Length: 270
Length: 68
Image 1: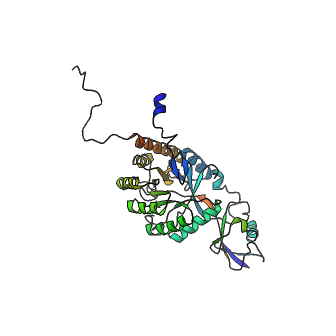
Image 2: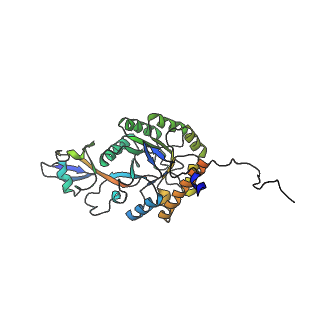
Image 3: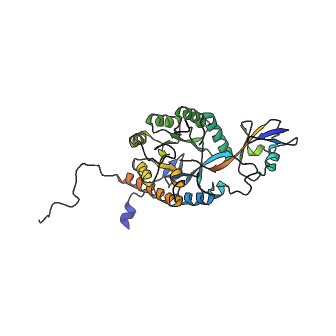
């Protein structure tokens, strides 16, 4: 029992701090692509996530009477909502979306900024993202920014005042995992704000690898919502993130080319 | 007068406040945000904001989406 308590617990003291608020969960999830609100609720709960992204879209006039509202299953009193600018291709649209989100959520200032470059790759348009970022920071938003796995861009966003930098692991929804671990590592080493991998994670080991590289968290949607059993995958992702974080804190052994026996040589009687 | 609401034309009696329009749309108790001609109108001003011919109104809400 005492040995368990002496371990550097990844749960109690080890917190993710974003814009001055502490979170025990390092897994952030999106709420898109689920088959219904009940599945959204169950998967979000199973993920243990405390920060949950939402999209801002037109209300369907006259077509949604009695339709369950997302905020009924993801209550803002329980979760930190992270409105995001998904689907924006210009700085102007992204800023407009954030301003509407702030009005919608009663002055809420935490936003996820993404400005996309094209529909085929969904890679970020860094130039437009920088432009939007400058306006949003000036407007008092706490910006978590989606960007390339580019250490120079990451540093620039940090210098501009973003509260978190979120490089992609691979293209959005691709499930390819971390394509460029050395760049992610460089971004982590350079940063003094939280770095979260956003986009491209496919399964629990991808999330664990991100955390082992020293990332502060992982943000995902498709890998959970698109799994055959989303609720089970949400639970797996929670464990993947926790395992990766603990392994990072524990400090792994260096890789060596040859064997290193784990039983002592002294006292050998044969 | 005619206005555009989320891209569709609607005919309204004059005068009409934003609050009256939202009531007509059945959205009075919903969590929404509203723009008129690209300008956000805070909830506190719905009752006093008078709509005008040709206004472009956008009504948005939060839906599932988000991350990747």
